[in-house]
Amino acid sequence: MKAARVPATARITVLLVAAALVAAGCSSDDGRATGNAADTKPAAASAGSSTGPGNGTGGADSTPGTGTASGQPDPAAPPAPATAAPRGAADPALKDFYAQKPAWKPCPADPTQRGADRGLQCARLRVPLDYADPAAKTTEIAVYRMPATGPASARIGSLATNPGGPGSGVRDTVVNLADSKPTLAARYDIVGFDPRGTGDSTPVVCADGPLMDRLQSIDPTPRDAAAVDAAAAVLKDFGRSCAARIGDLLPHLGTGEAADDMDILRGVLGDERLNYVGTSYGTYLGARYADRHPDRVGRFVLDGLLDPASDRTALAREQAQGFDAAFRAFAADCIGRAGCPFTGDADAAARQMRAMLDKLSDTPARAGGRTLDEAMASTVVCGYLYHPAQWPRLRTLVAALARGDAAPMIGAFDSYADRGDDGAYADSSLDGYFEINCADGRFLSAQEAARLGREITATAPVLGPSVVWSWAADCVAPGPDFATPLDGTRLPGMLLVSTTRDPATPHVAAPRVRGQLPASRLVTYNGDGHVAIYRQNACVDRAVDRHLLDGTLPGADVRCA
Image (cartoon, rainbow, N blue to C red; front, side, top):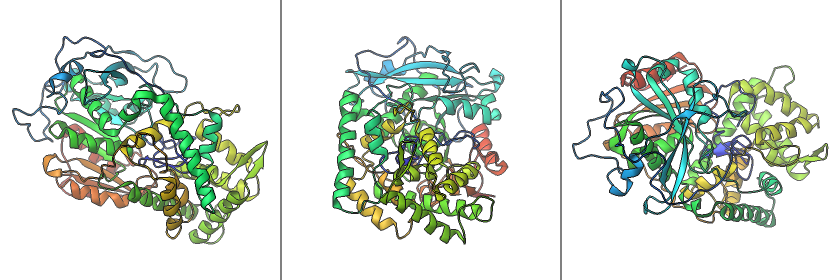
């Protein structure tokens, strides 16, 4: 999810936790956490709506497959009872949706994305706008596929993936997974879909540039009730603007709908069970899929764990503490290096950074006709904590700010948020992050954020308030917060992965999720940054490959250096 006030590319993400942020400065998921750690900036996305009757794109004359493409059952999953069927496919009203045949074509060139000329295929699927009334309106989702590179005789089936956010599209992630995991790409079709409201699936656009600027600059340390009221007014304006632009798609953007859409994709692809790699918010999507379709769970890898039993307050608190812990790790690495602006130890660095942010809260810095406030600076700092490879750049940015030069930090914010010189936000995932979390009921009110932000300064004084405020919104159609544990007795073993100093999905949640899934195994990566699966760590890779290729899990939980 996201945790900052910048869109996936702009603010850091939190979910709940993991790409474009909302209201105050950090987010739980940058939406591109699955990309290369050497990426030059932390990540962001787009907007729209779709209705209209119909039984789906493509023909309705086929039937969903009843096995994996290799024709072999998955040894990692218990056999489904003879009468078992996906929750959705058991409904006759959904028959035509599961019977679609995707019309795969080479993806059109997109200069902002990778994979256009590398074999990536695109298609579209029709799904019900409202699963409670599937015969009424429908909407489309964009789907992607990198066909398996190995011989057909060795093909296992499809491997779906989701990079997190929420608010992020999946196109880049499909390519990244295929590129970085050639052993998997040889035996699986790597597939994914843009969840509703993201990427090319009726992407939501909530606001123009000036309103986005106001949202990105909500003060995460409001000094009085009037400041909290002012923040609440911005959140209200943004929420109403979203509702006006999104229309009847608004209440149907939640994770539950995305999970049901994912099962239609599974059925259309002909896989009896879903094989899946989810990172950050993608672990929450995977958990909700398992809740709704337990008999269709295949080989699952969930990296960067969100606890589905935690409510929004607990998630915001733990993420705030996670980002502060990540800042201290960055500061400890910085101290003693050439150009580091901090002196003393990590505790002293935290006080020095907090003093810089307090100064920006009191008097925003000016450079080239622009201003830099606490929220914007916090967004940048949070964004560059996602990957240790970005720490040298963060060191340079903070050093410039300490010298009184705000221009580099403003430039970094604009790059992260995809804010152009004209003030327009070109590719923000903030809108999708906002509305998906609203549909899930995962946001705090301004008043709740202000209280928790004050409380969190005791344990997360540097970035904690900004992270908390990224969980604040005024939702026009808020959904219920389903903070419920997984029923692991119904589920096969999954491979769970967690990084000890992950800022966006803190490791503290991992033992709790592991406890809900007694047949699963937990791989703990002792390191920094968000998620571990793309870090080319031999220990992590070995466990992931064995589970996805052979259907086996470690005999016990594993700790990787």
